[in-house]
Length: 284
Ligand SMILES: NC(=O)c1ccc[n+]([C@@H]2O[C@H](COP(=O)([O-])OP(=O)(O)OC[C@H]3O[C@@H](n4cnc5c(N)ncnc54)[C@H](OP(=O)(O)O)[C@@H]3O)[C@@H](O)[C@H]2O)c1
Image (cartoon, rainbow, N blue to C red; front, side, top):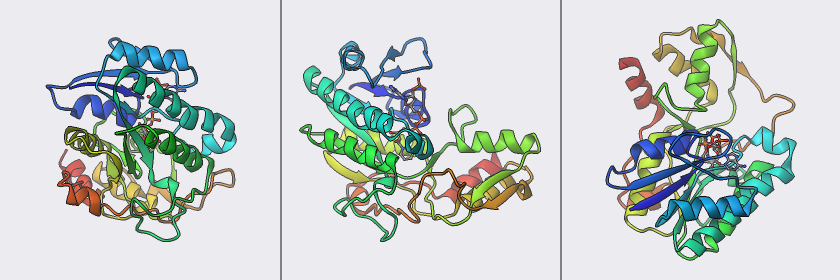
């Protein structure tokens, strides 16, 4: 199978390039960080998107690229819509023109977090500009026949080489003796990015279409997660400090737990809870 992955220089896209089956021909697309062998793709430019997708000559376009920081999106909601929503519309149109199917990466932030767990047909109600822009992106993706849309929660990786990874940032700060503020209120379901990539491969391989929720099942706050990871890496977890949201931070859902019953019923590979992953980190 020939696949183009947008956002291949990011956390999830880079895992897709590693995890997708070796008999798939996978091409990555970058935006600001050129990588030899990848194609350039700027979501703000229809010509660039079409060019990348035609150059990729693929059966599937996996659309990972996005502005994924809720705080960045809150500062410039128009830009968030332009890249995350209109950019997805451009990708969907170009994929349709090239005869490729679309797999779109969405988020649990399409929900308000007030009534978890959320099933695929529960009504979305985003709290922030990021959630609104990703939900608008979903709608553009789902307008394309045969599209797959997967909602996922907060990601991380145990691979020290993985880009934009919360654990690598934690390690760097703690090794330098810096304290790390972490939210102790919102409930999160930290999920390994590599396992999400494997879930995409499974769903694409079976030709699934429509919305699916994919998530690990164990809950924690960011504080609990980062302290456990710090201990596992032999670093000083006392430097991870309980903190409320920064005054400038975008609103975030309190608990946007995704119900994964549909994914389980399809026979999707199970995802490791954060405690199991932390055990692996200890052994490493
Ligand atoms: N990470 C999470 O916790 C999380 C949780 C839920 C959902 N998601 C979703 O998962 C997807 C992947 O997230 P991620 O964590 O891998 O993000 P990431 O590490 O921040 O990477 C973002 C990627 O998007 C590309 N990109 C950014 N702006 C672009 C533009 N204007 N045109 C083209 N490409 C652009 C970047 O390319 P360059 O680096 O080359 O500029 C990079 O490859 C996103 O759709 C995000 O909404 C992520």
